[in-house]
Length: 256
Image (cartoon, rainbow, N blue to C red; front, side, top):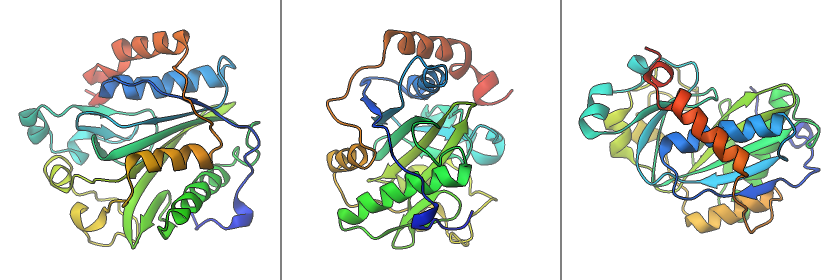
């Protein structure tokens, strides 16, 4: 996907609601994102932004990846680090403290231009690069869906698209765990051109900004006004169902 130009981006025409659900574990975080997508898709919730950061480390695979190829499973088992799978595409990453996530669920009709995959990435990533630049950070879009500062990756992004709405997962690394990446993640065979032969530690950087500042920036660039609400009862119920029937099962996470 070529780099976005200003004229490639769509328009933010509807302010998303801002939600927060503190105290969730890794499985609940992933399940809640899918539950919100289901609700927005079926008209039971408006377009939504959720900002979250896991309390413990865990490895998360993209929806189509093979665990044995992407993850050092023995090290994860030895250290009790969960290996999970999200519903969006993209590559394998280490989540946990130091990785601020934004989960953006948007109805296509709310943000013109997002029905096109490339247009949606252009719109969302251009919003974030603009926000980072206002913080004094010269960020740029690299590869298909990364953001980089000084040539180092600071954000990875992925989507799951439905008929009426899509989920955009993204992360902003403010305290990257290079040691954990080296221990739990295999070096990927599929590499963006700008990465070259660099290892995780050489390739992944951190944003020099406090998490609270980044949260405020993300809410601001997407027009989500605080205070954050809690997810609706039906979204929490669906989250718990998805944990039981999907995200707690090796059949989904490891594709056994």
